[in-house]
Image 1 (cartoon, each protein chain N blue to C red):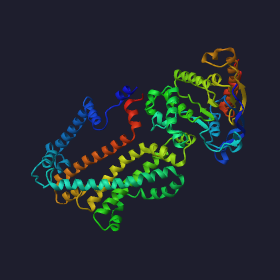
Image 2: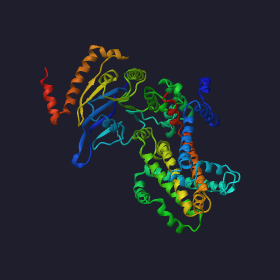
Image 3: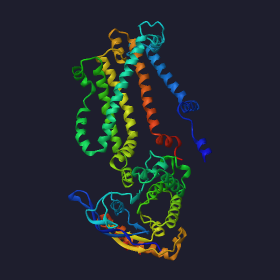
Image 4: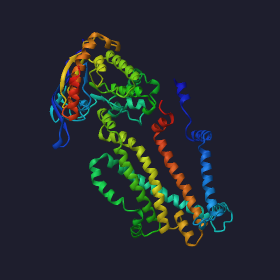
Length: 289
Length: 278
């Protein structure tokens, strides 16, 4: 029996990741992705640098941006080799880390309790529903009045947006749990706190992680908006600052960088989700026994 | 001879659902005895309120009037003494087979770790899932899921097992295998069982006593003692005795099922045309 168990125990961690990466090169997926990106770059180049069609000719072309990006001596002063580029990325990522952690730390427990206790939901849900529809940009003046610094309003805005999404999705996650699990737990002798730990918490995880994926996107959105309005450093600031002095190449570079960094952060959330929901991963991977 | 005194008693139970102005009676005047160490099978026309009866027996719902007694005390809320095996599987998808089976005793903390492990291994062996004990429910086939759920209930040694259409949704082959398996399980060790089903043959082959329910509001139409010899097997269904039980119960079920057609215009049309047939 033990031999068999060892044999069925697959690789984990980094080796599993490498195995999966290697395996994916046997499928069309990575090649299609390359072709897709290539086609997009080609269209961008064609409209912009070749045919010069309005309005595409008003922005910097892909060749120009890429050359600047990889240049040791950038014309507009910012590239992969200058310090301020990395400083801006670092500033934004640090803010996202703080805002997303705060929003998750507050939103998940709040959502769990709201889904679990009818009474608690009756108290809190109307307030949430009243505040949630207020667009995050409408909070900007208030946040500047409230916090007399550069940093705090930005963190506040990013946290707030992310928090609403996380809370709502977590609550819906708890409500989506099938009644039969509660009943099963009940007749097996669970007390209320057991039900919370063993049914509510694991049962809501799929929704929680869907929520977190959306919430990190929303956090980036409001962070950049806030950085553009007030702030020092950060990718949003970089976009706005370059725009003000007509450095459009640097502006597009910052935008593309945001795309990359945003992609990486949502991939990290996804990876954390599948790590925590092995029961779902295995079933999806194997398609049954 | 095993003891067959009365374990659970349902007395004059009434249950209705819905708002005052459209209150629908689901259970009315229900009287039922569940005897120790016997398998009481409950059949009824579809939609007659079988699941409500299960919920009442389990304690998930309480009667509007009347009483459900167990060993002299009234049933109030779910308990590990009355374990339910649900219609569709209710295994926790986030726990492995082994973790699901040990879920109850672990939470209650009423079994020392060593004997819990032994008991769990033994019971997982009994239901033939030894090689699947570290798999998650979604990795198991339908039949395996039902057996895992049986194991999760059995390990708690409940005073009564309540099975709510446990083999529903399985394909015909798996269903037959599960019936044979369950028959053997019941005959190896005496247990008190309430087995709710909409399949008459399944009920007859498993039951010591067969309770036929009426249409809504449901009540007991008749209790038939099934005296087929034990050990039983599915071939016995073709014996004359089994056929008589089946025909008798079928007639009642048919009558009750037809009642659900009356009261509507299309229903009375249906009944008329049905009555004109030779």
